[in-house]
Image (cartoon, rainbow over all chains, first blue to last red; front, side, top):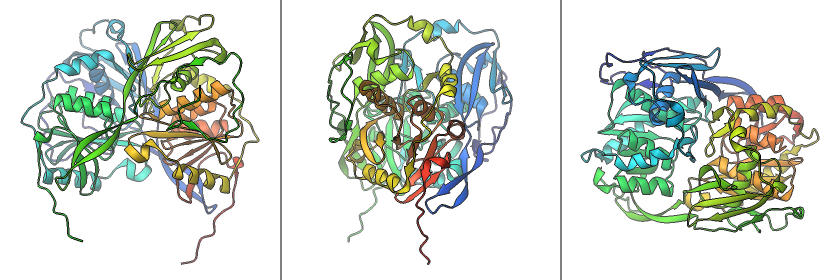
Length: 296
Length: 296
């Protein structure tokens, strides 16, 4: 399946590894991502305003209902894959035979190859409701698992690459620019964009990236994750589990996101805007080319 | 319990109804809401940056573990009350004898007066994971329940009141101004601020407002809800269940938030910034005093 071109799209020149022979069959369900409604402004003028779609998608794994996600619907198959991966419901992408989304019934049917272990047992862990937009639920076991993550010690980013990445994101066409009210996430290799997606919740967007990486066997080594949203504990944990050790945000950092990143040696760049940024953690992952202050 | 003065605080002159005789006993647990960390900027300068706290708070109802919420910790007792109310886990505030937060063990112990119905049965409904920051989980039954909400048909807001409210929020001291990365919510009566709170997830903030209203027996009639976050389905549903029919956001609207608001006659004002706003729904709730365009 070619991921939808807009707004979830790999860069045209992205050298993506060939799919595994056991790659699941994915549908390519599409729906409009925005709707035009009428709104009245401060001058009393009636005008057309574009708003993002938000629709429920109920996931069924081997006919067992899992969860209903609220999504803009840009990459529902990848979202489903990423959800299964990040909730640790299915151990390997090769365990999945197909992912079929049908917007008419707002359902996503996932079929495993040989059945999966009893889900009730897997999901019986404590529910931790996080600060994240989107999928608020991760299981406490993730918190333990993240402690065992081994991240590539060599992955670094230069200040020029960081700026090129931020420029690429600023120029990128997006649902956000046309309708607002969505969060974007992107995966880079250096300053080269591999995958970009948007959703009404930033955790759907990060899950869709994760699903794309899983599908294509892309590791987190030497990758950079970009998000328009905040770097909270859940975002940092999900990226760590994907093996990504450089995170860039237009927004800020929370204390637990900071603590986990510092402990694991994940570099957090936040408050990125034009040439400004703050690096909070893992200075060894940054090749500084400091700007010179212009004398006033 | 007097709610903490900052950043969750009722306005000093707010005429809040006296507590009900069966009002629960609340602890008044406090912890630092921000932490100072070092960060390096684009000039290679090391500087101090303030970030908001994010800590887990595990809720126990009659010693049964419910959920762990990630919170900044500004109003943990109100957050717990609002969570119980909005998840429909406890029918009435008078069913709760006490709410005791102990940050040392990151636990909130809620004791009911006479036991509550079997929680497993109540929470056995489908989990719907929403787009919301914070408590992503609401039960599908809420979606049904919201259809039966009767909102006050008389509640309106004038353009001047809307501006006074926005000015009050712009002037209000906040964690956001000092540390960023939090969402604020506020409850107004006309342009008079009744309650303001912030959290790392906007759904924690709305739950804390809901808990405060529950505690003080404040109805949603003639109230206005303000949020820095987006008006997604979950935000609109929660406000509807609180009986609030005027919602104001600095941010945008999603399609499902729009649809629910339109169906229930809830007025959505979004993209509010200085004198600009867009009213999307329920025009009958707005008393327009349109600005005049200045000829160029």
